[in-house]
Length: 321
Image 1 (cartoon, rainbow, N blue to C red):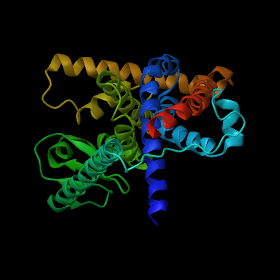
Image 2: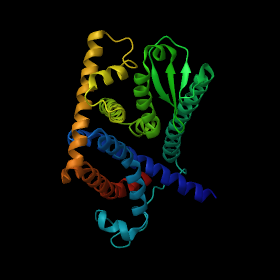
Image 3: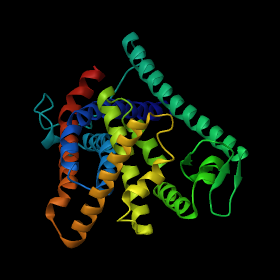
Image 4: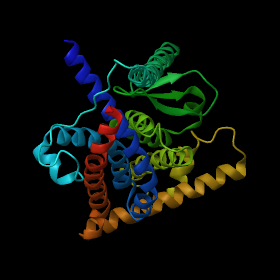
């Protein structure tokens, strides 16, 4: 039993270390991916970004599996003293010495702290959602009405998202405008955007601050552009983009100065025009360059697995000693 728990602990520590190193490498190569995504639509950019940030833990799992099978790992590792008698490589952190005890204890504390942070965030989110439900009224149009003079509409919840609209916003919208807002928020709910953002948040938790903030903001922008596009297409308002964005922007940028708000709205209109153009272009052509982000991500992931196996081998041996 102790041996089994020890092996699980060693694999978990090894996975954590490799994931951490790969996450930093992926953070450093994100500007390269972003340069490629600048020519893609929001749908493709959103999908590629989420896959990209989830690759380090997946690559770490595959690297550890390869290292545990000498026949697979041997061609990828550097020559060492084992010659051809290479045995499965896992982390063996002994608790017989003070250094080993401190190392194991430190890793356990870090992982426990991270799990506690995630659990605390989930508990608080569920509590806030429960309060919102108690303070709101159910509506036949599949949204919940909350009594507030502010002009706000949002989608809350991870697995079963719900749409909330304030009474102040509802009173200010026509039936047509309300339909546009509901389509936008319903798209967020169908796509599970809150869950996607939550995954991206924790997957980039250890990234450098500026890059972390940049990728999260970019992903949020992609989500908004996708929902704007769906609203424009379903309402067939291609010729009234300014009016559509003006309606959707009435739920955003609360408290911002008028000039700042107008600047954001102009950017949003420009982004929607670009999405409509890319949508029309993609439907009329089969350009192989559209697959470039996927090819780049696949190449980076394959390279990261090979790198993790090659350098993970001596890293695990050094830590074990």
